Amino acid sequence: MSYRDFTLSDVVERFSLTTSETSDMFAVLPPIQPSALLVETLKTNVPIAVAISNEKVRSELIVAPILLELKRAHPHALSFFSGVDLTADAAAGLTGICDFLLSLSPEQAYVKAPVVTLVEAKRDDLAQGVGQCAAEMVGARMWNERAKNPIETVYGAVTTGTTWRFMSLVGSTLSLDFNEYSIHDLPKILGILSSMVTPQRPPSAAR
Image 1 (spheres, rainbow, N blue to C red):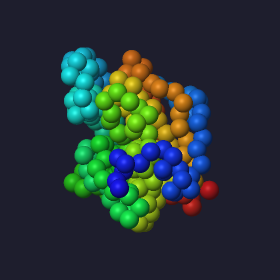
Image 2: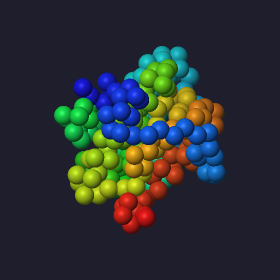
Image 3: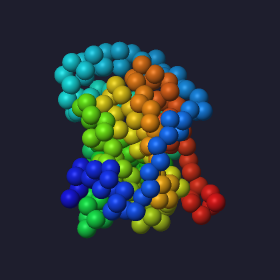
Image 4: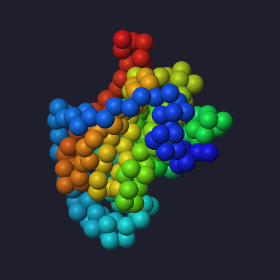
């Protein structure tokens, strides 16, 4: 078993989580205007990605440029990775390749804890990716703890490139944002993603 084999119910039952679904998880966050570079890039890339319509193309042409915008905005506090292995507990099935992950570290040569955000790209079905992303979030928390660099909240996102859905894991509570955000509301998506990569204190210090 690996991350991609998990459904949402699998994750909740196996790791004793409770779920919370809300429509206002990120309602108060201010939007962030995209750079001219990102606007121009997506103007070219989105129609191509939608026309070809497979996960790889959507990941490369839409998702990666958006996440790289965060890296440019936080060059000394954030690292960006694509297609990396994140094995946290093979016996529990918490192993496999993550489409994208963001770490609160400037180290770009290798993944260094703490991993803060996981992003899974899907062709057209967000629901299909929620369980996989939730499992990766549990794995990231274990991985951070093993590296002795835990953080209070691990975030996740499932996206088709043109539609995004977000979630968070705090303690045993997995919170899912009921809203789906369109690429046409890119400033809101960037505002949410930016809030996710704001440095956090360790759980013990946050209480």
